[in-house]
Structure formats: structure tokens, C-alpha cells
Length: 98
Image 1 (cartoon, rainbow, N blue to C red):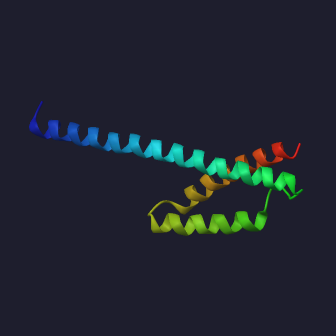
Image 2: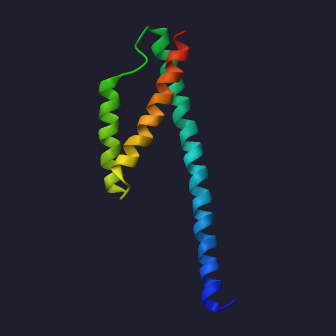
């Protein structure tokens, strides 16, 4: 193995370790987020509030798109990601209302 190949292998290993760490951060962050949205769902059900809030969702999507641009992440990807999460949250909120 050449020195360049060995350096590339070490760099690859370092990038993969960072990816693994960030994946864990994402999973735990989503877990924390869903704990809060579950509490919101229960609160909405207890007070007979609608499961979804389109105005809040639109505000959050616009906010996330702006954050994505700041982070040099494709805003369209960020929007799709948040829409996916929102739909899952609404599904959970509707389960509390049954």
C-alpha cells in the first residue's frame, strides 16, 4: 500500500467515524423531538385541539429552508425532510385523539 493510499484510508476512516457520530446525534435528536411532539399531541387531544396546525407547519418549513441555506444544505431536501417528520407527528397526534 502506498503512502497516498494509506493516507486516503485514514481519511476515509475519519470521515466514516464522523458520519457515525452524526447519525447518532440525528437519531437522539429525533427521539427528543418526538418526545416533545408526543406531549403536544396529548395536550391537543386533552383540549380538543386539531391534530395539525397548517400555519405553524408553513412557518416551520420556511424557517427550516432558511436554516438549510445557511448550512449549505439543499433547502428542497430540508423541506421534504421536515414534511416527512410533520406527517409522522400528525399521525401520532391523531392516534391520541382516538
